[in-house]
Length: 176
Image (spheres, rainbow, N blue to C red):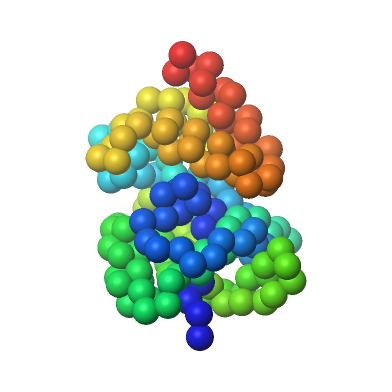
């Protein structure tokens, strides 16, 4: 059986593993937002950045990309993803049902936020998010780069996210 990974943030533009197929997909029951403080990749403990996570929201759905892992690379891909995504235990790894744009139903590895983790910060006003993103830098680079790459990639594949588009414009204005 094929292994799929659901990408909604940096996995869209920096998956870090071999992809056999990439398809627009919809994950019901979750909403993408900057609801996780980043103390490693896009910020520090002293000045956390923000990264996207999936908040469980029964009336919502997140549109992203389903990434099919190349046959024979499943174990190394899962090990890589766990090292990358579970660095601080703020994400929970789940296998969830996802609908591909062509109608296929699959199960995918998905990383969702643990709302009880101290890095969870759901519900921050957009202006506060913009100020944090404009100024934070972590060991993978500026938080602005994360936002710009994600928003640009979503537009490239024809997906709209009004909050990310607003943040992209506002952060550019703040950061100059």
